[in-house]
Length: 346
Image 1 (cartoon, helix red, strand yellow):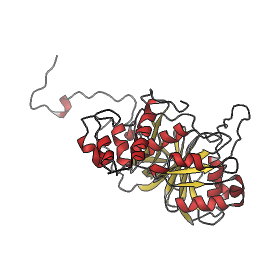
Image 2 (cartoon, helix red, strand yellow):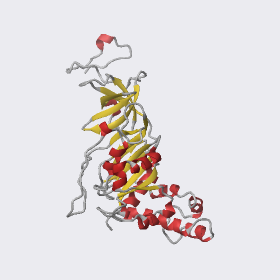
Image 3 (tube, helix red, strand yellow):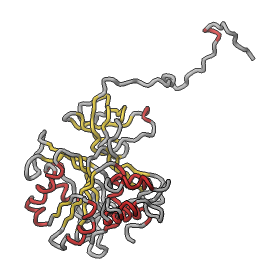
Image 4 (cartoon, helix red, strand yellow):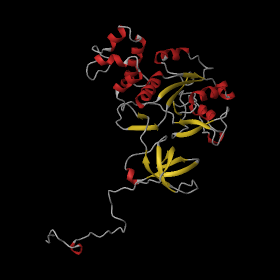
């Protein structure tokens, strides 16, 4: 076996032939300094629809990103054909750091978390007051996911013509969550959309809710007419809606009063997500939920290490007893923390 000395000539070095005929691999990656900035609007089977300036561009993820996936709402850098013409394809070469992330798991035992939306400012939790009946446990879980992911929650109650909202609103009064109540008649004449639009103006808002609550119907009233999605109905036997939205999609919030405006008069974004029947919280660190309660957070300084805030030695009991916060606020915190231990239907 031949051994090479310190002063070998280039001709003496064996080079393994590249049978594939392509370039050898290298750890040096291109910087793509000329890449254009864009936003992911939707993802479908590995193809990503992105908005680059005023053009809709189809793209795929570059190999150098590895397993890092882009989701709706991501700010990305793209290279390649950015014309937006039919049958063209660009490449996503960078994904910017996310300001917020809405995540969920299939259930509380599933270790695999799914990123639903990135960089949203707020989470609109859409719940019908009847047909189907409201599910407070699911609302609680969405609130926990919003607080954990850095989104501000907004409670949107639909179908108030079928049932009054008072009882449900009382449950969330101490949380201070903003809310809006709509009816089917108001949705039809545009009054509901105008009230909701004022709460979304200039922001990116993700809409979540279980099937049949009128989520997509409300989204359609908020966006330009040419960008509306199909809707379903509630099954009279099961009381559940049919999934008509199968993938998350970012849509421009129309600037006109009736939501039919198009073009550049966009005042924000709404992200319609598929209807959910469960919202797993396996990914949530319970210690982060306390950040949504600024009046209670100082009282945790005396808590034992790794305190769950729902145990005999928790310092929050004394903090509330001394008058620093309302007892109802502590109850609300513990109710939300307990949602991770309960199923939505419990």
